[in-house]
Length: 193
Ligand SMILES: [Fe+2]
Image (tube, rainbow, N blue to C red; front, top):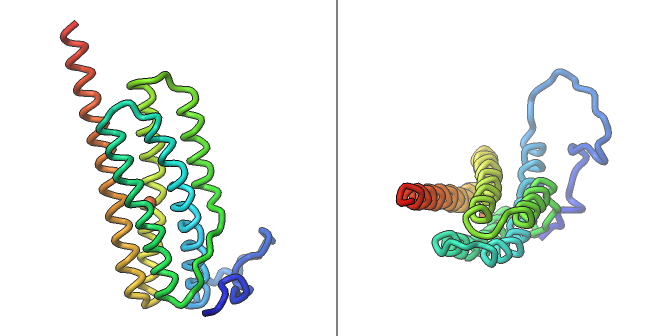
């Protein structure tokens, strides 16, 4: 199995060095493959980081429904890490994680929100808002990577990435449901007063 770090060709810009546009928008198989592998390393890091961040969110959640939804998604996230390892294997690449700055930022923001919100409904709403931002980032990433895999002819990888995409969509919908039921409950309590 070849190492992804050493096999990297010079097509990717190194250290942000400026490259002048040639006006040619064609994309080679090799270039797309590099973007694909780079994206996989990125989401691999992100999923691993989430397996550490989610338990903190579960601990802080007040609503049982929210804690359950996050707990179920933690188990799914652990499965997604393993699934990504299968994706790497399916394309004969070593599973390597590369820091995802976007996910690091989203997790940092979630921690800030949790530190700023008052316990109870406000904290739950804050956790949901942070969680949905994470889900949408993951949906965008898996959608793009699945499309790249299809173009590159990596059928097995495309199927696996679609499975994770479906799980992220379901997790996002579940968080929306938790929000709606919490708001309905709050409105009912307000009306009783
Ligand atoms: Fe995920």
